[in-house]
Length: 253
Image (cartoon, helix red, strand yellow):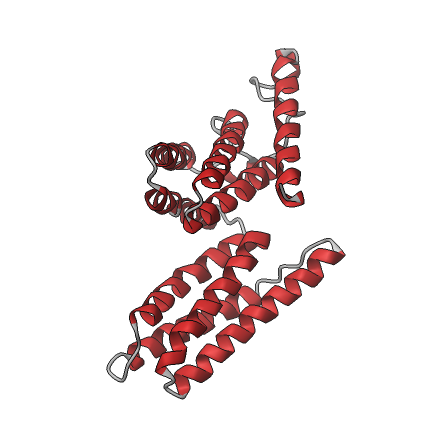
């Protein structure tokens, strides 16, 4: 078991303990049953998001045992967020009329993915989990919440069609359309770079800088191959763009 995995388990255990303590505190300490001493929305969302990203990765890789563990952890973290914030949204989302409906939709996706894994349908579970990150982009956008992970999701939305085109094969007849996708990719990456995100810890800053540089290099190499009409090289270079992005998203999305 990796140190990163142990750290996430420790966070979940601490959150469970905190919510159990909060649940038994006298209700007179809580306005409307809402306990101010329970974990904040940021803490609960980060716990959910970290497990969700790992569940996405595990199901994409087709790892059955790990997928089941990660989706179970995601369900636990999501359940804790719902327990505290479903009926009483945090301040940033307080006026959102779709808050409860969207949270219910996310719950449905997670439960469906869990059932699909139980039936051994790992690719289907991955496809079911995918829309959750896009739904959070929509929630944050309509409530004026800026989050770096959302910018990465937007970049993913333009990257994926490009990678699929590259895998299918680019030739003289499709190179013009592929260039349009590449232009969208470059513009999307520029938005990521200009977001202004910076990790707090020194070791994270170094790793973040290296990952951004790796993605920039992968995109530059793909652009050069496209300009040179290096059709055999385009597919492999597009895959490197996706691989570099996956590492960045897992760490900082």
